[in-house]
Image 1: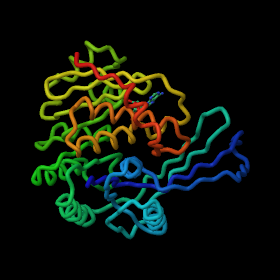
Image 2: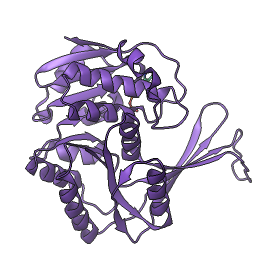
Image 3: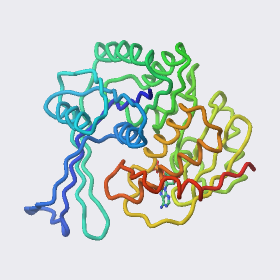
Length: 311
Ligand code: ADP
């Protein structure tokens, strides 16, 4: 089983409002409300791939209950720590030119007691799984090294952790004693970490990924949207090329990629197969209107078109 962690999940609301009027009343009949947050997208895609997944994190209030019911309706197992503070909403107002305005609530501010309770909760869950994914931002109130504490627990049980986060929480794990097995920054997130504007040049990426700050991380997948990915796996480098496809909605592709990585790693596949699976799930996500959703009907056809080259 794979454990998918989302510490700050949200009920994502999308309102379609063709011409949004500031300082005025906007009405819409087109509303969608879904259990969201990066790790829940990961859990959904793992489930759609037909694999066992347990969704975890911290939820509270009516919105927490809504998320749990939605996951149950989708047949996704979940075991969240409950907090007495309500979970958050994230609102996207979709305009007719393909652009969107987002309002993101910060979510609950957690205390030391909840932090300790989640560590216990996680310790128990890690015993039942082979791979853990950790996605997204930390809730307010948790220490910046909280993911490092989860990494230490996973290391004790020799469980591989795939970490998909950015900013100070990621930087803290790079300095931690226990490293994630895999990180998946996109090019702009990697640029932020190394404080250099990277454009995808292979020689430059090779040099950057050899930096000692990444020592101890077995696999680094730098996802590059339509350009596929560049990967460092132990001491080897791989370029992953993907076919040109018709994109409907690219949001959540990184999460679908993490889901593909987790599934193939949990199955003990070769690095080539792991990367081809991840690129395929990323591509399949871009072909759907729903964020963090894939249809597996054409999985094999796209998988065959991914080219993984050791360079
Ligand atoms: P993130 O969502 O984290 O920014 P990316 O945009 O790099 O991640 O997308 C992750 C993966 O999804 C890519 O490596 C690729 O496989 C697929 N993907 C994303 N955007 C596109 C696109 N425009 N065309 C084809 N595949 C895409």
